[in-house]
Length: 378
Image (cartoon, rainbow, N blue to C red):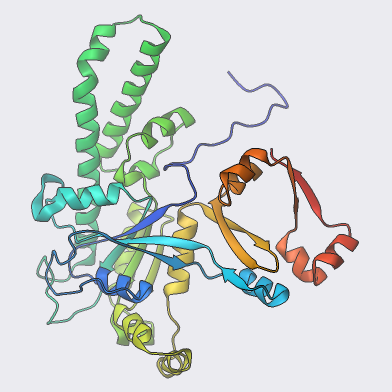
């Protein structure tokens, strides 16, 4: 039935678990540079040895999301402290062909991917005789296929398990049943439809799903439902000269198989060398010498955006802070990032648009111009 004229459009349910504290996992074949990337982006000390399963337990770290608006507010308000938004990054050990059937500790690693909300899919586009390629020869398109196939196979296995467990119960229900029986049959039919879609070689995230479908999909924690950002690890030389013989091939594969997904080239060696320098002056000198900047700010903000996250700001004498919430969140949902008690008791709030605040020069000027907005919780 079509909605009544003038009725608000149904709000689209998002793929993925609800919440503001979402995580993104670094996924790829062994020896593509995942731990080197993770070490540099978090300044942590995960082992980066040259063998496939050096990272058995996933390592986790929070990295600050760069935002010039927060920097401007900090300069304007001059508070005692500044707290950025954060993206939680998980380093997941390398997957190999056959991981969905348990090869290379694959089942454990795939369960780690199930626990994150988005994926940084890392592809190797550098040659180094001292770093073995687990498949022998360099072939980024093959490497992309291996990872995607393993994720799809795991999804099919999980969905088949659900179907096998519930098939007899659904069959016994027949054509009638209670409201609860109808709900179970509808859910079962959705799972079968999703299984068939993935079994044909498609990712869940690329399907057209209704809100009812998405609610069922979200209950299954499927790997191919997660947003993907492709990170292409090139040599420091290629990164500096902005050329790499594999980039066009990788871009072509993404455009043909997952159009619209973001691709970001970076160099693990460059980022590692940069992160190892002791102070900002030396890091600036290094980037000027190489004539390139770090790719990490773009990687972090793209990953954050892929999770459908945004942030709002609070500013006062004690602190200027960026708070994370989902895009489209209502006021009380966003306030839950600060404290549940605030979210539960909030009736209305004064809001300033950052661009208008900056253009006016400050809060007093914005109020004088009549641009201070009052918003209710809905």
